View 1: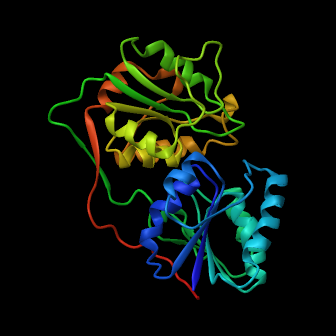
View 2 (view 1 turned 60 degrees about the vertical axis):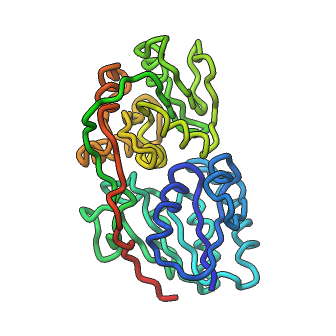
Length: 315
């Protein structure tokens, strides 16, 4: 028995990777995802099938992945497919269902109020079991299984860290930059502070020195561990990376009204994680150096054993 774990790179892959040990899978697992610095670093030592990249609401990308999925699933090696999205879930679930395989879709932790477009689509695929990470919108179709943030706890440091090293992570989405936050940080960060700038596709008239589109996962994790504070867009992968590094990030949601994303799901996630105390949520135009100082006064730790993710598997 072999399980195929399918996810887009970025937050979707980060979530599936963190949830994977909690699924209790005892057989071989194979990953299907995009070829990126993140996937190469995160999945080092795992069996990985690289599939064509697809971005948000990318019909052509989804079609290419459908063809790739048919090739991957040919031969009967896999017994089930598990995915956290995004569109690659639909691309793999359709041929997997036709082959009689069990399909499990875990909706992203970014979706605090209801399913995403992908979630609504895969709900129509036969033999697909659906899971939410929020009990508030669980129902007869969507089962609450737990959340990827289970087991993380924040506590205030007895001796706050002075802010001298900062990691800025704006995500790597090809079509959505975050110039409001980048321009604000250039304005408020003192010149003597050492900064690692991961800016993705974000561009402003004068990029800060050393700005990089992407930083490999292992390097980013090391930089976050060594930093006094992390400032990031409100993506789930960025939150998880900061928490693993022990940092309570300054967490800034993209806004649809500024063409920074397709909707305001980052606003909802930022609000939820701020209530849990795991991030310090702020708006892009209002971030201050005092916010960074406050965030640097906290640490985030894994609290120990975490309950298994509650899922049901007919396979």
